[in-house]
Length: 299
Image (cartoon, rainbow, N blue to C red; front, top):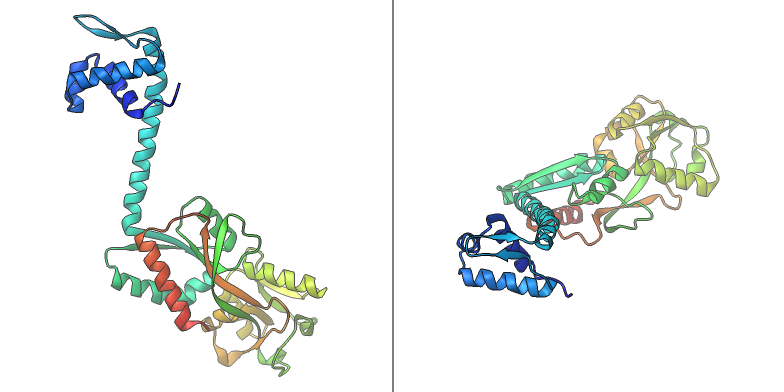
């Protein structure tokens, strides 16, 4: 038997639930003869009678009851799925939810979101500030439209669109500043190091760099926030390894930002999206704002 037309099944369910061709026709706003013809077409396709017809009433045959029991639940689930998709589409027409790495949220997103709100006053943008691994989980669960952050290695189910290169620097207070124009991680020796914690892409990148160089850093402080790292630098407690984009959060008079010369010391910042995901109107417009802002204000 070839695939049964869903319209025939819908008509069958309508007749079965109302025990009447005429009532089913009234509900469907169609002629009783058209309803009867569709039921006969379905019976012809399945090769058996589905209804017992008498002058007084109609009822389901045992085979018809079995088909009803199986079909009614499946059609209800299908309808619920379609209604859910309609609700999601309605929400997305006016609302955009994105995820962003903490440092980028501090440096870039304020001006972007303010400009976007002025251009599209009916839109609602929500931002979730999360580490890269959490951003990927949100993307996978379709809880955010896209993620703005540093490039992540071995992306299989996601696409990465680079926006800018971001140089890693050693933020050295006067007590640890040797006057060099550039530094290798090897040059830091036993210097107390201030580093963001292992959940961050920066920590993972520094780990790959030290592994490549065959060295171990004297990591004295592992922190969650860039602003805390810069506060410890200001207090003279050590040298912080940070991306250049984070320097706007600190006081440049209290330390010197020295570029690292090691391989991998320039990371890419960009947009991460789930493969095959189609952006809706407002999220696509927000992506354009983000691309323009990074193109004009890359540090």
